[in-house]
Image 1: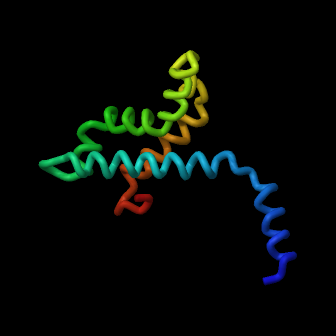
Image 2: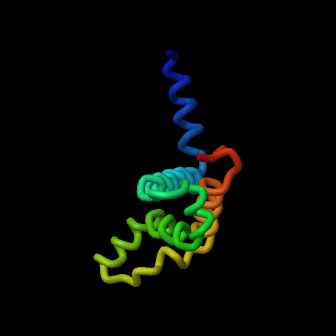
Length: 110
């Protein structure tokens, strides 16, 4: 390959805003982990029935896992534990991802 092509790609990637992309990827992986965990635990019924019967508990567990690193770090550093929940943009983004993972038709996002 041409070394100049690698340099051009590296320049484009470094100028790209990475903020929402990495957060969205993290939220998708965490919501899928919660969905798989609930699916493995449920003995009767399907995953869809749990997320539809208990949407608040499913959302709360997803939010706790999405922001678990910040929650634990704030606890260990002696800062307010609920500080990650002050940023409404992250909460809305994580909620939108949670909704798409759990309620998209035909499991398109899942």
